[in-house]
Length: 129
Image 1 (cartoon, rainbow, N blue to C red):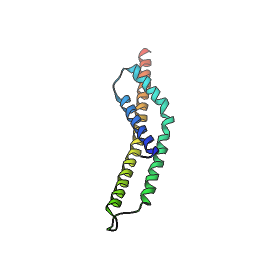
Image 2 (cartoon, one colour; image 1 turned 180 degrees about the vertical axis):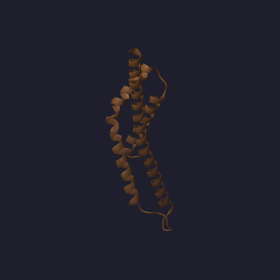
Image 3 (cartoon, rainbow, N blue to C red; image 1 turned 30 degrees about the vertical axis):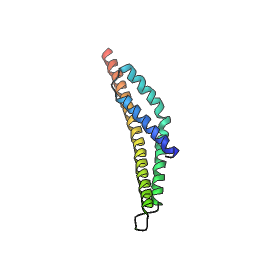
Image 4 (cartoon, rainbow, N blue to C red; image 1 turned 30 degrees about the horizontal axis):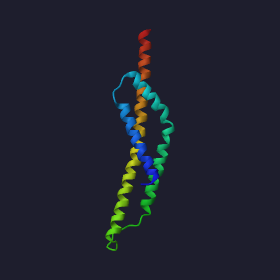
């Protein structure tokens, strides 16, 4: 596995951990600190979107220029190598899409939580008046 796919795999694993951390029930004080920390980290981690998009373009380009091995001319080893490269490309495409979707989910969850906090503050101010 090339270095870029290892990096993308670790990023997806980290995004899964963050998504689980955001969705687990926890006390309000702890949850607000977690959301504020994740909100600060989200903007620098936006690089994952163009990185994954570039990797998807690379997969597409390699797929378009890949030698086809479907005829009777291919040996069994060549056919296995071709199928293995197809499976790797599919796995990597799923990894890129998962990275983008998880980033979007984390962004939306943290944004919703911040909106809920703002609404609770407004409600508290109206109750105090």
